Image (tube, rainbow, N blue to C red; front, top):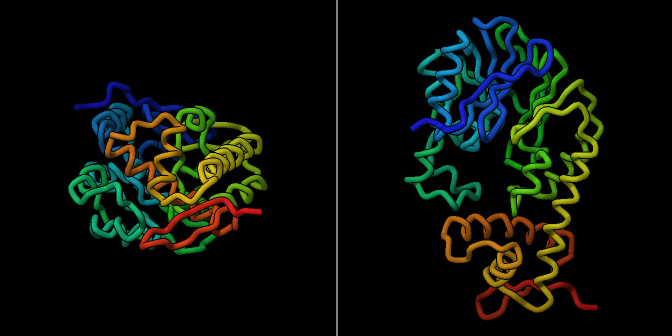
Length: 304
């Protein structure tokens, strides 16, 4: 079944556009519609049918498909676009490894995905070209994009600045709507994510595209709200650790405070994964102590 939200085109600046779905914005750079460069491809379900129909209706041919990182809402339609448009797919070295087999996902903490689930939302389309690690720019189809390396949310994530000086920040900066609606933002490494956000406060571009889900002219204040949200989640975890608790006990306490359903398997498993990243950061910064007792790792705020 297709999405109830019909994707549409949104003009950003110059030759930079977006496909807007109910869940994300997918950048398109179109010097002309016969050779568009798309950045990420959106969710497989429920958006594939709507995205392909929009491209056909608007007579847009995707010549090149750039990949920011290997998460299902960013690579879900790579295979379909490759089949329909014959586009050249570009990925980072890490994304190339992940694209080979769903079992690789477990190696980087995707324990919420069973192998059956992993084969569903992901698109195992390998790259035609590699985005060189650490490169400052990349030229595709005669068009040069500047690159932003954005670790933290994902193990390896890259942003792109179009020739119109529009920066696509992928998932590094969340819109106010997402900050208000998501109980536990996703981080792979919170320390790196916070560093990346601080770095982006120095970036100056004409406009900014957020994958979820907006376009803005300034990002400094929004980054500060993203940073404040991370600290709020850290304080929440700390507050539940007045006495020694195992990770499971700590997660249950945090999820209870957030009003999450403790009997919903996907919510609990996903919540535990995200809380564990917060716990690891708190231990790293010595805001939580830990001990091993009778085979269990327990955590508590340091005592005076």
